Length: 81
Image (cartoon, rainbow, N blue to C red; front, side, top):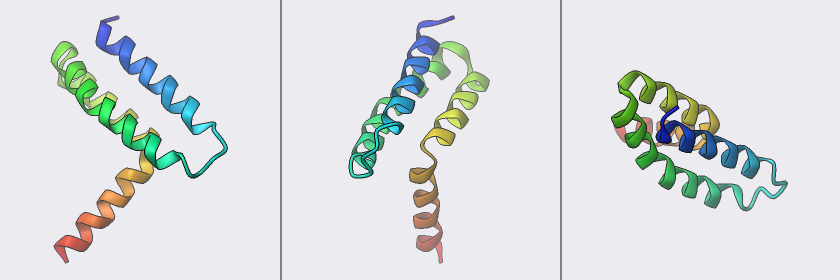
């Protein structure tokens, strides 16, 4: 397993641990931090392992951080209309 995939696994564990905290007030700042670390990590995974593994990691990250993706889709849809 490459270093980038190990870091992605640690990112997933951190995201799941943050999701277990009972406070709703801290979820969005934590999501911003996860996104800030996840985007360069996704580039690193794609660089080391290829675009298919990068796509799998992207889908996994989108499933974990689904609400920011939903809000982004709503915002983009409202901007187009």
